Image (cartoon, rainbow, N blue to C red; front, side, top):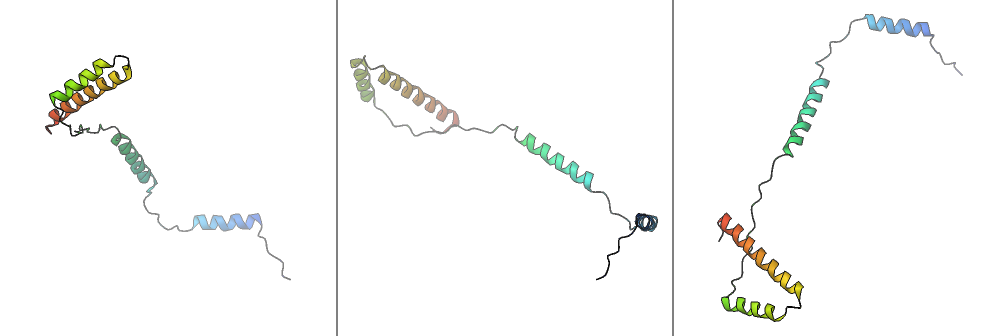
Amino acid sequence: MKEQYYPRLSEVIARDMHRLNGTRQPRGPDLGSAIAALTIGLLFALALAGCTQPVVLPQCIPLKAVSKADENTLADELDATPDMPALHDMARDWVRMRDEDRAACLKRGAL
């Protein structure tokens, strides 16, 4: 069995010094800082892109035409049931939403 050779520290230092004093191959440009700057720039641009305000267009729901007679019938039924406040609130909300939708559609020009 052959003994394994371990170099002395002085031999390792001498070999490394010889390697350091020899001619070195020219190195290419250092791209690390350019890549870092590009990455930071892209992250900054993405962060600012989130600051833009989205354009929100009103959605026009097709309105069902309600005749005056139907509106009068609804008013009579609501007047006949004063003990149902939830029904009155829902009817008021429906009228408000209908009017808001009509105004949005007029503003957009869809009506």
